[in-house]
Image (cartoon, rainbow, N blue to C red; front, side):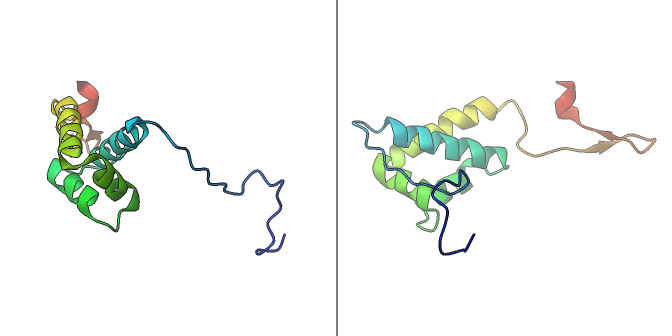
Length: 107
């Protein structure tokens, strides 16, 4: 199949669809997903807020502009409180025989 002539029946082609909503629930849900994803990657709240404030990150920045800083800050606080009992850094400990121990698995 030529690059410039995609097959309309190909299920692997990307199709964008705009969905209008009456409230900001879809934008809030998208922002929550971004917060969770970056937190799982090990970013702290300050770094995640900087990502939302940076125009180069199109999705987070769009959510930041639509919801406002206070809403994003609230999402960050809520999510970080959920993750607080666990370390955001992966801790590897080696046993004397050379095996790797993951303390997070012993919780």
